[in-house]
Image 1 (cartoon, rainbow, N blue to C red):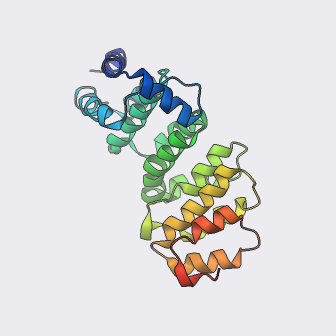
Image 2 (cartoon, rainbow, N blue to C red; image 1 turned 30 degrees about the horizontal axis):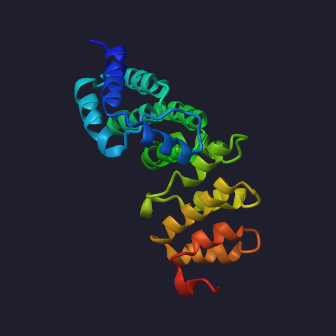
Length: 233
């Protein structure tokens, strides 16, 4: 039996509408600096919805997985997109190389840090770790893409990878975008390096000092936040 997309979407909208809080919605919209509407339902209120959604509307194939994620993603409210991403992550058996175009689409269409960062660190990261030969050639192209959010996704997609980080690529990606003045790229460089510094502090310290003249102050401060005496101030 194929998945009932309409039933899944109707369930999500009905349950979110029950908890809608106009004051929280307005605050969230202002915080995110977006015109996209919110219900005003924070994560604790979405978790029970996700549980039922995963239990009662499971995709049986990768194609159904993509159809379900996109059906939820295409709904108009921010929380529906959050649930689309949560569903995409929950069905981890479908986080496979064939799903990378889906994640690329979500990053481009998301176009803001709360959506892009989730895609990069919870969907793209398992792919570059688990299927490096198949996936890295595509992600390599993102770091030079005209879409700023794809560039950010490439830089941060190894956040949380720890000892499985492809160090050469991380440093190469950061070096390739150091010239940018865009805040979200500078912040991404600092975040990615700061995270990897927990695993390889000496390597990050050497990279940062070797590129100190090219690195923005923001990236440098973020990258060296926990490096202590390894980096002269």
